Image (cartoon, rainbow, N blue to C red; front, side, top):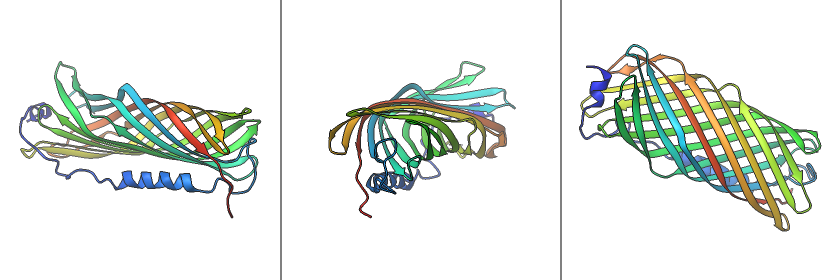
Length: 304
């Protein structure tokens, strides 16, 4: 029986994996809280005229085509695409560790709290479609960047990002998919951090011409059919633009707003599936978003 016929089965089902663990999600939250509590200075020195800061961001993420996952089956001549919007609250934290007048470290993390979403699976060629819901979508990131001031308020950036997304897809034909993506990105970029009389402005651009990682896929129904694979991410790129403006309101406390846009594109190796089929398949994934909101920044001298 071909793959399309299995997708048309209509039975009640439950994930063989029993769902996902929340431990990585909780670990990110704990790490973000720890970031905001670190001393603001490694040394009691100013960097670009201002001390290191801890920042907390609360925003709203939105994109009508935020997450697009395309499965390519060359032996059947099919491309199946699941696309759905991203919408929900976004929480981030950033810590600026000052090492010297010209060098520092930025450590940051973020967690996305999505609204319930839905979309349509489309197969090409052919008109076949399946509506679906996204009952669970976990997306979080961890970044580490080294900073080097090169001229005035301009700094070069280099570092690493871990981008994690895990998704459950419930189809209208009573079948299910699980996607788990761990992407690892070497980052390079530049930022402008300008201080005015009572205002701080930050513009940052980071990106990566290559993306590595793993993508795990699992599809099943309740009649015994299942297919799964573990794919190596072998290509892709990433770009993020970030703007932040804050005003000092009392002492070292500042409040302001921010705007962020990012785009992640990945491709996997072609991999033979396991389970009820041995079809060779590959994935192309695109994740993009706009996020805007408010930020709270504070700085304090190290007691050590």
